[in-house]
Every structure is written in structure tokens, then in C-alpha cells.
Length: 196
Image (cartoon, rainbow, N blue to C red; front, side, top):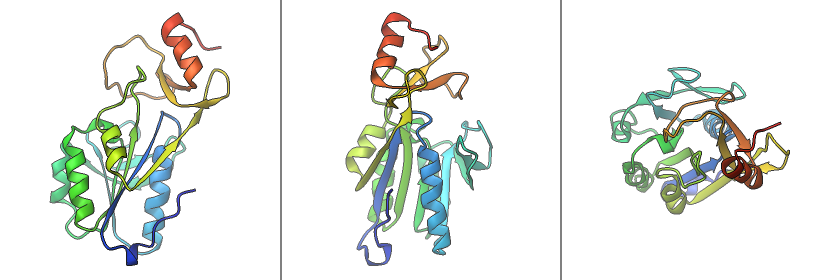
């Protein structure tokens, strides 16, 4: 389990990235860390891409129904209009934002903010997804979570798309995606392998 650095003695801010495949608990972990900050009476602001309204328009909600209030933005630069002196900033689903997110979160960390980000590390084709790999490279703390393969029960690292679409960003749930291990993901993509 991730234990927060002692923020009061920290000289500057920092970046934390929580990555992994779909259904691995990334948003659940983001909410857990942010709620601990709220318990410590620190102000928290959470942002998500405006078109990501799968569960709610005004909250970030995990697959397990944990929730925290959020602000919808279209572009990552909009964060500056909201945060003022907020010391803790959460960003859900970083892969939906453009490459500018890397510069913005580094700037926020240099200004003393704790920035906690979630994002898929790979897309449905098993390729690095958006700016998440760059965010992982510049972060002080990286947590890579795993799901359980829906086909064989091994640790899952890939998000397998169940429907025939080549759109890079396709918002979906369990009816459109499932978590798979490397082998079951590869079998599904190469041999058109169907889950049990």
C-alpha cells in the first residue's frame, strides 16, 4: 500500500502516477489517497475530462462505486482557473488529455502541489497510451496496479476490447472491455480468441 510522504517537511511538491489496465483499481486508489488528505484537513481538487461522464458528471466514481466530487475540464490548462492555493490536485484518466499535461503537472509540482494522476498505461492494442508513459517518467512515485484476467485468472496487465472498433478512445465498461493477462490478450488479438 502506498504511504504518503510527510508533506509538511517536503521542500517542494511532487507527482504521483497510478497506472495499469482497466479494472485494476486506479480510480479507487486515487479516491483513497485524496480522502486521506481530506481527513488531514487539506484542501483537495479533482479534475476529469469533460466527456468522461460514464458514471457521473460531477464526481469521479470508481468501478466499485467510491466517489469524490470533481470538476470537468476540456483542456488541462483550465486547472489554473480553479486551483488557487489548493495543495492537493487529483487528475483522473490522464490518457484523455493532450501532451501538455506533462508540462502542467510538472509546473504544479514545482509550485509545491501534490499532484496525483491516474491513467491507462496501454491502449486496447497494448501500445503506450497518450502521455501516461511520460508522466510515469517524470513522477516521483509510480504505482502500477493489476487486475485479474477474466479469461484465466492470472494477473491482468492489458485492457482487451470486446467490440470491433478501431477508435483509439472509446469510453466503455465491462460490456466493451475486460482485463486480460499478456498471454490471453495476445491470443485474443492474434487468433481472434473468444473468452469463455
